[in-house]
Image (cartoon, helix red, strand yellow):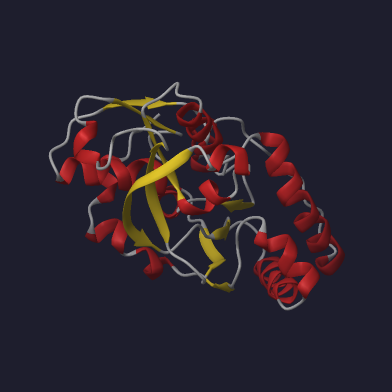
Length: 243
């Protein structure tokens, strides 16, 4: 899931994959995609054996490819946030009516869909602009290029202090279970199990948990499709834009 630029994603995931290789004897290739749209096309075509995806993606992927959620972060919920420049007079999303608002991509669940659903519920019409990554959203708002932008709490906290200090949160959405680390059903069951056990073992050591914290996956728990029932209950699929 390209929440950040590719070099940063590689720095996060390659050490985790190296540890998985040591523990399982399997070989892992890191495949990064620069744009969320390209990522969506790849997982909908079943190109990934293992994949970290947002909750809406797992529902879509389950229908099309049968992807199975394995583990997720149990320490938090995924919530969208709407940020403005810290010096902006804007205090609520109602003041964004008719304004251009940046999002990473149409189908970024927390950053885009949960925020857009809240705009829709309040009958606030905005002009969405998609800028590829969470980091781009925050940077644009921090530099005054954009009036407001959608992100999620975890990626906001992951930004450099110099960027975070220029931003102010004016809205937080409802919460949902965060991104699952998932597996394609073509992967043999014993391989799936060995990867899940290896991730659990990593989470049980300070060194391994330090690697998982960067995802972030601060409290690793088993994931299941029922964790994401809110996708259906809140009719969030109606905000999905096929690309």
